[in-house]
Length: 292
Image 1 (cartoon, one colour):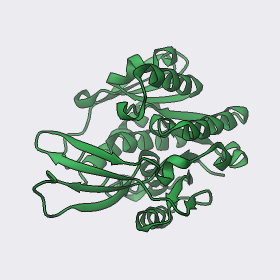
Image 2 (spheres, helix red, strand yellow):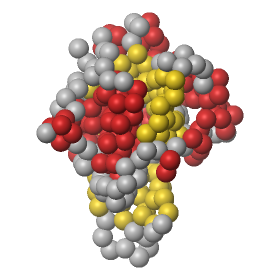
Image 3 (cartoon, one colour):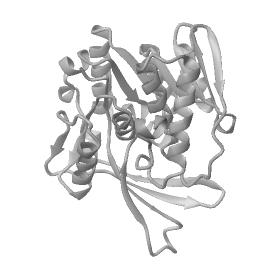
């Protein structure tokens, strides 16, 4: 049985300093669901990933990484005649990296409801989706909705990360409507402090809500109690994969039957590992790293 099924877009990522002056750059692959699937696999969980990749070198690299990390890629499709999307990440001293996306018409954005394997999702313990994939276009949104519907009909736990990116949405109003809809359908909700107003209808006592509070750490409201954890003080290289890593750590601990406080602790550990690496996922720990 799959522990966590997820679907989304994998992207190539080129990281450098200010592009107009730099002569060197770093090439990698990334994506929130991509990172989460690998993080869970490294911790010994059975994760499955659904996505479309371009018939190009970036697509081949993403698929090789997933396979190499032990992620179930049975449902990954290589879309002939399309390209894998790309993000240019400019590092800036004392500021968040500047992200420039080249994803219009990308293979990953062409995900459709017909690509969603209802039976495979119904057989999983948990489905994890994000607001990023929901914001890639109408077909991708309907694919996310189809996955969520399959999970709900089979009583599969639904995890949702809001991941609000303004550039993906026609308006804040539309983003609020869609993100609130998905948040209300979830059992486990991840969001940043500044995203609370976007999904107000979902902030009910019966839902497990995990909030990233930035420098203050993170908190969760579960079983009508609040628990908090401080962030680890580590040298920061790149914060880009921190949110997905935290969610993976929290979900991992939940699958292991740990308490909310212990879930937060594992999430914080994975987030700390992510920010100390130039890659969103390459620096993430294995279970032996955590407990060896």
